[in-house]
Image (cartoon, rainbow, N blue to C red; front, top):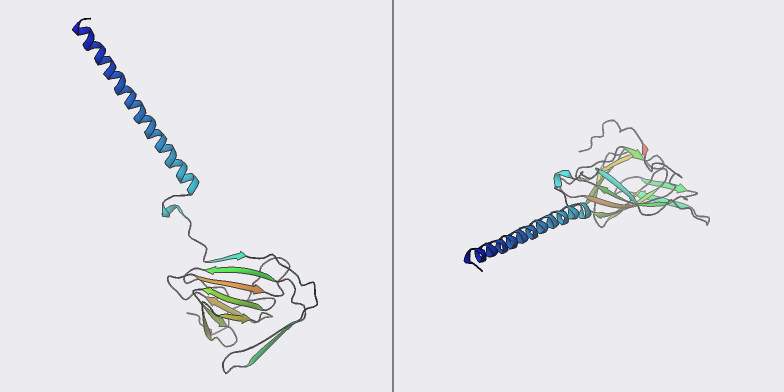
Length: 194
């Protein structure tokens, strides 16, 4: 074999090895691009600007609406410090429902009432409750509970924080069979809510 022929064969082998290495590099890059794309689709990893902000107030029902099979009466007495005692008698408190309600910072419920009493546990953050009859703002931090009398007792409530969410777990009695648990009401004259 001549020297020229040996050099030509060596050059051809080197060229084949380089092409093979380039092909492997291209396959690796393509595989990596597919894997990253699949990761975005599978795991929802997108820039935060593409994600929708949560609603100001979100309700997650923890139970369906249920009825008592037994004969149950419910009487609630509520007296705030130095105030009058309010009594609500529910002769048929059936159709209960339990919901987790999340209020984003600064979110406020519209003025409303409920068909029946509501027992509210504040499990995160703070809720400020304002009743229309006295316009007093009552603050309930996490770890406290309160009773909303319903039966036309008009009120609003809001999350006073600029940074933290408020989380409530509420048990509604005398809930309507379907539809909203809030009965819209007019804001009382002269009652200014911060």
